[in-house]
Image (cartoon, rainbow over the protein chains, first blue to last red):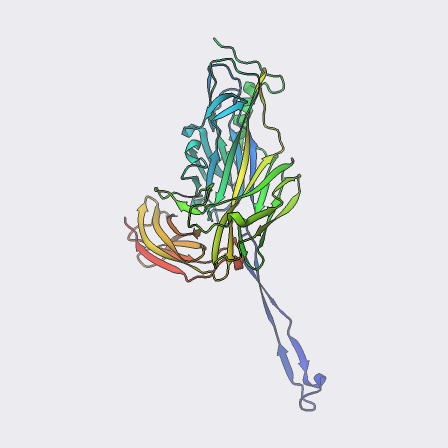
Length: 204
Length: 286
């Protein structure tokens, strides 16, 4: 899809007789051959990058005083699973930087439950071409807390050269787990919320 | 011993749900219900039109809330040589920022499933702006219409909703702009079944260098035995690591040829400033 294609169209030659044009020696069938070459260059741009949250972080059963770890990749403790975001149409020759805006707590008014993302068990990257189950292009674990928007570095997606051709559509699934530390006190009833943002920047 | 909070019937966690979650990861996630595509990934806006356009599209099955904003940043390397684009809240002094002059129309929108929307990015620079290139990044933030999973624990619920942000380059050019690149230093070494090159680039002129880096491994006869190419963006200086996997059986003294040209197939021709190519050939340390 990124290839530049050259299309060459040669216009049919035109044969004109001098007699028909009313010029030239009488009776002579002089011929003039004319041709034209049209050079067209069609550049097909890369397909647009797609971003899609695929699921939210799910901590399952919560009890006072509990510490609940949800890893980025299976096996998950019962009733939990990690957050997932998919990016599609990534290109091999482009590097991408992934960063996170991570909450420190889920809150309801003045009440809060701390949540953290420190540890390589809480981040997982799977880059694939044919099946997400294979991670055939790249897979790696990372600590999301290291790559926050305020950190000096983002997590670099550098698709290996051997992973496919330049025209391959690479997909990257980013999974984020976390640790919930529930206070050993009575919690206020209601909804505790926090956003989790995954940012992808092409290094261009 | 504390008892777990009771859960609602609608969102009751069960082992089966965990199993399904694991299965989704193992077998690949289903097609996203909420999604947005953005193109192009870089806008080069000139002083003649002072306008650029983005196209957003929602291929999902649910509405998508989109917000367009701007920030400052460009590819930089940290002390370990890792390259990234950090979006800064405030623009450092002396940086050629265009953030303050850029506006998006519309700035907020809801994309219905299957809907396509053109977003115009307009630049309103000061009248006495000096010639040159000015940098910005567009942040396309999206939040799906799908309500976040609510984990109901009796009367306590937990929500961690996921949002995505795509960051695109948006540069504004006024008057005479030029670019070029120099190789300040370069090394090459064999790392197992690959050759690793480390090159430090420095930009010349007054505009970012956008081009392509091609790395070729040459054998003792000068024949190319492996190669790779990558996009290259040098805004000021940039250390860059490039790895070229070798085919099996390649031995002997090798050389690495680095070739940099202003050719990009992902940008309109007018967006790429022409510059002389740069080539450097290095001995590969065994």
